[in-house]
Length: 292
Ligand SMILES: C[S@@+](CC[C@H](N)C(=O)[O-])C[C@H]1O[C@@H](n2cnc3c(N)ncnc32)[C@H](O)[C@@H]1O
Ligand SMILES: [Zn+2]
Image (cartoon, rainbow, N blue to C red; front, side, top):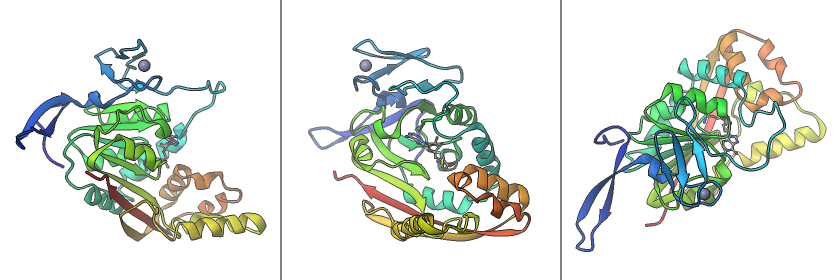
Protein backbone atom coordinates (compact mmCIF):
# COMPACT_ATOMS: atom_id res chain seq x y z
CA UNK A 1 0.00 0.00 0.00
CA UNK A 2 1.28 3.45 -0.73
CA UNK A 3 1.75 6.19 1.84
CA UNK A 4 -0.64 9.13 1.90
CA UNK A 5 -0.33 12.81 2.79
CA UNK A 6 -1.98 13.14 6.19
CA UNK A 7 -4.76 11.43 8.11
CA UNK A 8 -8.31 11.33 6.76
CA UNK A 9 -7.37 12.19 3.20
CA UNK A 10 -6.58 10.37 0.00
CA UNK A 11 -5.12 11.62 -3.23
CA UNK A 12 -7.43 10.95 -6.14
CA UNK A 13 -5.50 11.08 -9.36
CA UNK A 14 -7.37 11.98 -12.49
CA UNK A 15 -6.26 12.50 -16.06
CA UNK A 16 -6.72 16.02 -17.37
CA UNK A 17 -7.80 16.42 -21.03
CA UNK A 18 -4.15 17.11 -21.86
CA UNK A 19 -3.29 13.65 -20.52
CA UNK A 20 -1.51 15.02 -17.44
CA UNK A 21 -2.20 13.34 -14.11
CA UNK A 22 -3.43 15.76 -11.46
CA UNK A 23 -3.71 15.11 -7.72
CA UNK A 24 -6.68 16.24 -5.65
CA UNK A 25 -7.08 15.62 -1.93
CA UNK A 26 -10.49 14.47 -0.69
CA UNK A 27 -11.61 12.89 2.59
CA UNK A 28 -12.17 9.14 2.35
CA UNK A 29 -15.71 9.63 3.69
CA UNK A 30 -16.58 11.24 0.33
CA UNK A 31 -17.26 7.73 -0.95
CA UNK A 32 -20.33 7.21 1.26
CA UNK A 33 -23.87 7.24 -0.15
CA UNK A 34 -27.22 7.58 1.60
CA UNK A 35 -28.70 4.12 2.24
CA UNK A 36 -32.22 5.53 1.67
CA UNK A 37 -31.83 7.46 -1.59
CA UNK A 38 -28.23 6.72 -2.78
CA UNK A 39 -27.39 10.46 -2.90
CA UNK A 40 -23.85 11.36 -1.80
CA UNK A 41 -23.46 11.68 1.97
CA UNK A 42 -21.70 14.70 3.39
CA UNK A 43 -19.90 13.46 6.48
CA UNK A 44 -19.34 15.90 9.31
CA UNK A 45 -17.90 15.48 12.80
CA UNK A 46 -21.28 14.75 14.37
CA UNK A 47 -23.45 13.42 11.53
CA UNK A 48 -23.72 12.45 7.89
CA UNK A 49 -26.43 14.00 5.74
CA UNK A 50 -27.64 13.78 2.15
CA UNK A 51 -29.14 16.57 0.01
CA UNK A 52 -32.59 14.93 0.30
CA UNK A 53 -32.52 15.50 4.06
CA UNK A 54 -31.71 12.08 5.47
CA UNK A 55 -29.41 12.32 8.49
CA UNK A 56 -27.32 9.76 10.39
CA UNK A 57 -25.72 10.63 13.72
CA UNK A 58 -22.14 9.59 14.29
CA UNK A 59 -22.08 7.11 17.18
CA UNK A 60 -19.78 7.41 20.15
CA UNK A 61 -16.62 5.75 18.88
CA UNK A 62 -16.94 7.47 15.52
CA UNK A 63 -18.77 4.94 13.35
CA UNK A 64 -21.90 5.59 11.30
CA UNK A 65 -24.97 3.38 11.38
CA UNK A 66 -26.17 3.23 7.76
CA UNK A 67 -28.25 0.09 8.14
CA UNK A 68 -31.82 0.64 6.99
CA UNK A 69 -34.77 -1.64 6.39
CA UNK A 70 -37.19 -3.63 8.48
CA UNK A 71 -36.95 -3.47 12.23
CA UNK A 72 -35.43 -6.53 13.85
CA UNK A 73 -37.13 -8.19 16.80
CA UNK A 74 -35.84 -6.91 20.17
CA UNK A 75 -32.78 -8.86 21.28
CA UNK A 76 -31.78 -9.91 17.74
CA UNK A 77 -28.13 -9.37 16.87
CA UNK A 78 -27.55 -9.18 13.14
CA UNK A 79 -24.23 -10.72 12.11
CA UNK A 80 -21.71 -11.97 14.60
CA UNK A 81 -22.51 -12.12 18.30
CA UNK A 82 -20.34 -10.76 21.14
CA UNK A 83 -18.95 -14.18 22.12
CA UNK A 84 -18.07 -15.05 18.52
CA UNK A 85 -16.32 -11.67 18.17
CA UNK A 86 -14.34 -12.10 21.38
CA UNK A 87 -13.26 -15.59 20.27
CA UNK A 88 -12.22 -14.22 16.86
CA UNK A 89 -10.24 -11.36 18.42
CA UNK A 90 -8.29 -13.83 20.62
CA UNK A 91 -7.73 -16.40 17.84
CA UNK A 92 -6.71 -13.97 15.10
CA UNK A 93 -4.66 -11.83 17.50
CA UNK A 94 -2.60 -14.94 18.34
CA UNK A 95 -1.57 -15.06 14.66
CA UNK A 96 -3.06 -18.46 13.78
CA UNK A 97 -4.37 -17.15 10.45
CA UNK A 98 -1.28 -15.05 9.61
CA UNK A 99 -0.68 -17.00 6.34
CA UNK A 100 -4.23 -16.09 5.23
CA UNK A 101 -3.60 -12.42 6.02
CA UNK A 102 -0.25 -12.53 4.17
CA UNK A 103 -1.88 -14.00 1.05
CA UNK A 104 -4.65 -11.37 1.22
CA UNK A 105 -2.14 -8.52 1.53
CA UNK A 106 -0.19 -9.83 -1.45
CA UNK A 107 -3.33 -10.20 -3.59
CA UNK A 108 -4.53 -6.69 -2.74
CA UNK A 109 -1.14 -5.20 -3.62
CA UNK A 110 -0.60 -1.44 -3.89
CA UNK A 111 -3.90 0.41 -3.69
CA UNK A 112 -4.21 3.89 -5.14
CA UNK A 113 -7.35 5.10 -3.35
CA UNK A 114 -9.89 4.03 -0.74
CA UNK A 115 -10.29 0.38 0.25
CA UNK A 116 -13.48 -1.11 1.70
CA UNK A 117 -13.44 -4.31 3.78
CA UNK A 118 -16.92 -5.86 3.60
CA UNK A 119 -17.89 -7.96 6.65
CA UNK A 120 -14.83 -6.52 8.41
CA UNK A 121 -15.65 -8.20 11.73
CA UNK A 122 -13.54 -6.94 14.61
CA UNK A 123 -10.97 -5.45 12.21
CA UNK A 124 -8.12 -7.98 12.11
CA UNK A 125 -7.67 -8.12 8.32
CA UNK A 126 -7.84 -4.33 7.94
CA UNK A 127 -5.16 -4.07 10.62
CA UNK A 128 -2.97 -6.46 8.60
CA UNK A 129 -3.56 -4.74 5.25
CA UNK A 130 -2.89 -1.37 6.90
CA UNK A 131 -4.11 0.66 3.92
CA UNK A 132 -3.61 4.41 4.21
CA UNK A 133 -7.30 5.04 3.69
CA UNK A 134 -9.92 2.47 4.50
CA UNK A 135 -13.51 1.83 5.38
CA UNK A 136 -14.79 -1.19 7.21
CA UNK A 137 -18.41 -2.29 6.94
CA UNK A 138 -20.28 -4.95 8.88
CA UNK A 139 -23.91 -5.68 9.64
CA UNK A 140 -22.95 -6.34 13.28
CA UNK A 141 -22.86 -3.19 15.40
CA UNK A 142 -20.74 -4.95 18.01
CA UNK A 143 -18.18 -5.93 15.37
CA UNK A 144 -17.99 -2.34 14.13
CA UNK A 145 -17.60 -1.02 17.68
CA UNK A 146 -14.63 -3.38 18.25
CA UNK A 147 -13.06 -2.52 14.89
CA UNK A 148 -13.45 1.20 15.62
CA UNK A 149 -11.57 0.86 18.89
CA UNK A 150 -8.81 -1.16 17.19
CA UNK A 151 -8.37 1.17 14.20
CA UNK A 152 -9.59 4.67 15.10
CA UNK A 153 -7.80 6.11 12.06
CA UNK A 154 -10.30 4.43 9.70
CA UNK A 155 -14.01 5.00 9.08
CA UNK A 156 -16.39 2.20 10.07
CA UNK A 157 -19.97 1.73 9.02
CA UNK A 158 -22.79 -0.54 10.14
CA UNK A 159 -24.42 -1.55 6.88
CA UNK A 160 -25.39 -4.28 4.48
CA UNK A 161 -23.03 -5.97 2.05
CA UNK A 162 -25.95 -6.46 -0.33
CA UNK A 163 -26.76 -2.75 -0.53
CA UNK A 164 -23.47 -1.02 0.11
CA UNK A 165 -23.90 2.63 1.23
CA UNK A 166 -21.13 3.54 -1.21
CA UNK A 167 -21.12 5.75 -4.30
CA UNK A 168 -20.74 4.20 -7.75
CA UNK A 169 -17.17 3.84 -9.05
CA UNK A 170 -15.62 5.36 -5.93
CA UNK A 171 -13.31 2.67 -4.48
CA UNK A 172 -9.89 1.44 -5.51
CA UNK A 173 -10.30 -1.92 -3.75
CA UNK A 174 -12.91 -4.08 -2.03
CA UNK A 175 -12.06 -7.04 0.17
CA UNK A 176 -14.27 -9.70 1.77
CA UNK A 177 -12.80 -12.32 4.08
CA UNK A 178 -15.10 -15.20 5.04
CA UNK A 179 -17.92 -12.70 4.53
CA UNK A 180 -20.67 -11.98 1.98
CA UNK A 181 -19.32 -11.10 -1.47
CA UNK A 182 -22.05 -9.80 -3.81
CA UNK A 183 -19.94 -9.31 -6.93
CA UNK A 184 -22.50 -7.06 -8.67
CA UNK A 185 -22.26 -4.61 -5.78
CA UNK A 186 -18.46 -4.83 -5.90
CA UNK A 187 -18.53 -4.02 -9.64
CA UNK A 188 -20.81 -1.04 -8.98
CA UNK A 189 -18.62 0.57 -6.29
CA UNK A 190 -15.20 -0.10 -7.83
CA UNK A 191 -13.42 2.54 -9.90
CA UNK A 192 -12.34 1.46 -13.39
CA UNK A 193 -9.19 -0.58 -12.78
CA UNK A 194 -10.18 -1.21 -9.13
CA UNK A 195 -9.83 -4.68 -7.68
CA UNK A 196 -11.84 -6.96 -5.43
CA UNK A 197 -10.20 -9.71 -3.38
CA UNK A 198 -12.11 -12.42 -1.52
CA UNK A 199 -11.06 -15.13 0.90
CA UNK A 200 -13.49 -18.07 0.81
CA UNK A 201 -13.32 -21.58 2.25
CA UNK A 202 -11.76 -24.38 0.20
CA UNK A 203 -13.18 -27.93 0.18
CA UNK A 204 -11.29 -29.17 3.25
CA UNK A 205 -11.41 -26.01 5.35
CA UNK A 206 -11.55 -26.90 9.08
CA UNK A 207 -12.75 -30.37 8.09
CA UNK A 208 -11.64 -31.82 11.43
CA UNK A 209 -14.08 -29.54 13.27
CA UNK A 210 -17.08 -30.56 11.21
CA UNK A 211 -19.51 -33.15 12.54
CA UNK A 212 -19.98 -36.52 10.83
CA UNK A 213 -23.22 -36.12 8.89
CA UNK A 214 -25.65 -38.80 7.82
CA UNK A 215 -28.55 -38.90 5.36
CA UNK A 216 -29.70 -35.65 3.77
CA UNK A 217 -27.27 -33.56 5.83
CA UNK A 218 -24.37 -35.65 4.48
CA UNK A 219 -25.52 -35.10 0.88
CA UNK A 220 -25.67 -31.34 1.54
CA UNK A 221 -22.20 -31.34 3.12
CA UNK A 222 -20.74 -33.23 0.14
CA UNK A 223 -22.41 -30.81 -2.24
CA UNK A 224 -20.91 -27.83 -0.37
CA UNK A 225 -17.49 -29.49 -0.41
CA UNK A 226 -17.74 -30.00 -4.17
CA UNK A 227 -18.71 -26.35 -4.75
CA UNK A 228 -15.73 -25.24 -2.68
CA UNK A 229 -13.35 -27.35 -4.77
CA UNK A 230 -13.31 -24.41 -7.21
CA UNK A 231 -12.74 -20.70 -6.50
CA UNK A 232 -15.63 -18.28 -7.20
CA UNK A 233 -16.31 -18.41 -10.97
CA UNK A 234 -16.25 -14.57 -11.09
CA UNK A 235 -12.53 -14.56 -10.17
CA UNK A 236 -9.91 -13.81 -12.82
CA UNK A 237 -7.14 -15.03 -10.51
CA UNK A 238 -7.10 -17.44 -7.55
CA UNK A 239 -4.64 -19.00 -5.19
CA UNK A 240 -5.34 -21.90 -2.83
CA UNK A 241 -3.71 -21.48 0.59
CA UNK A 242 -3.45 -24.58 2.80
CA UNK A 243 -1.70 -25.13 6.11
CA UNK A 244 -2.05 -27.15 9.32
CA UNK A 245 -2.64 -25.69 12.77
CA UNK A 246 -1.85 -27.50 16.00
CA UNK A 247 -4.06 -25.89 18.60
CA UNK A 248 -4.39 -26.00 22.36
CA UNK A 249 -7.82 -26.37 23.93
CA UNK A 250 -8.42 -22.59 24.21
CA UNK A 251 -7.47 -21.83 20.61
CA UNK A 252 -9.53 -24.79 19.39
CA UNK A 253 -12.56 -23.56 21.30
CA UNK A 254 -12.07 -20.01 19.98
CA UNK A 255 -11.83 -21.28 16.40
CA UNK A 256 -15.02 -23.26 16.89
CA UNK A 257 -16.94 -20.31 18.35
CA UNK A 258 -15.83 -17.85 15.66
CA UNK A 259 -17.11 -19.98 12.76
CA UNK A 260 -20.64 -20.94 11.69
CA UNK A 261 -19.65 -24.59 12.34
CA UNK A 262 -20.76 -23.97 15.93
CA UNK A 263 -24.38 -23.98 14.75
CA UNK A 264 -24.16 -27.44 13.12
CA UNK A 265 -25.75 -30.26 15.12
CA UNK A 266 -23.15 -32.54 16.72
CA UNK A 267 -20.29 -30.11 16.04
CA UNK A 268 -19.24 -29.70 19.68
CA UNK A 269 -17.75 -33.22 19.75
CA UNK A 270 -14.60 -32.17 17.87
CA UNK A 271 -13.84 -29.37 20.32
CA UNK A 272 -14.30 -31.65 23.31
CA UNK A 273 -11.20 -33.58 22.16
CA UNK A 274 -9.04 -30.70 23.43
CA UNK A 275 -5.29 -29.99 23.42
CA UNK A 276 -2.84 -30.65 20.60
CA UNK A 277 -5.51 -31.08 17.94
CA UNK A 278 -4.45 -30.66 14.32
CA UNK A 279 -6.81 -28.65 12.09
CA UNK A 280 -6.38 -27.97 8.38
CA UNK A 281 -6.93 -24.49 6.96
CA UNK A 282 -7.86 -24.53 3.27
CA UNK A 283 -8.93 -21.28 1.58
CA UNK A 284 -9.19 -19.64 -1.80
CA UNK A 285 -7.77 -16.14 -2.18
CA UNK A 286 -9.35 -14.79 -5.37
CA UNK A 287 -9.43 -11.51 -7.21
CA UNK A 288 -10.61 -9.65 -10.25
CA UNK A 289 -10.02 -6.19 -11.66
CA UNK A 290 -12.75 -3.92 -13.04
CA UNK A 291 -12.34 -3.02 -16.69
CA UNK A 292 -10.95 0.44 -17.27
C1 LIG B 1 -17.16 -15.19 9.44
S1 LIG B 1 -17.23 -13.48 9.85
C2 LIG B 1 -15.71 -12.84 9.15
C3 LIG B 1 -15.28 -11.53 9.77
C4 LIG B 1 -13.91 -11.01 9.32
N1 LIG B 1 -13.88 -10.71 7.89
C5 LIG B 1 -12.85 -12.02 9.67
O1 LIG B 1 -12.56 -12.89 8.84
O2 LIG B 1 -12.34 -11.96 10.79
C6 LIG B 1 -18.46 -12.85 8.74
C7 LIG B 1 -18.74 -11.38 8.98
O3 LIG B 1 -19.67 -10.94 8.01
C8 LIG B 1 -20.64 -10.14 8.66
N2 LIG B 1 -21.87 -10.17 7.85
C9 LIG B 1 -22.75 -11.20 7.71
N3 LIG B 1 -23.75 -10.84 6.88
C10 LIG B 1 -23.51 -9.56 6.48
C11 LIG B 1 -24.19 -8.65 5.62
N4 LIG B 1 -25.31 -8.98 5.01
N5 LIG B 1 -23.64 -7.42 5.45
C12 LIG B 1 -22.49 -7.07 6.07
N6 LIG B 1 -21.81 -7.90 6.90
C13 LIG B 1 -22.30 -9.14 7.09
C14 LIG B 1 -20.78 -10.76 10.04
O4 LIG B 1 -21.36 -9.88 10.99
C15 LIG B 1 -19.35 -11.12 10.34
O5 LIG B 1 -18.66 -10.08 11.00
ZN1 LIG C 1 -30.89 10.30 1.37
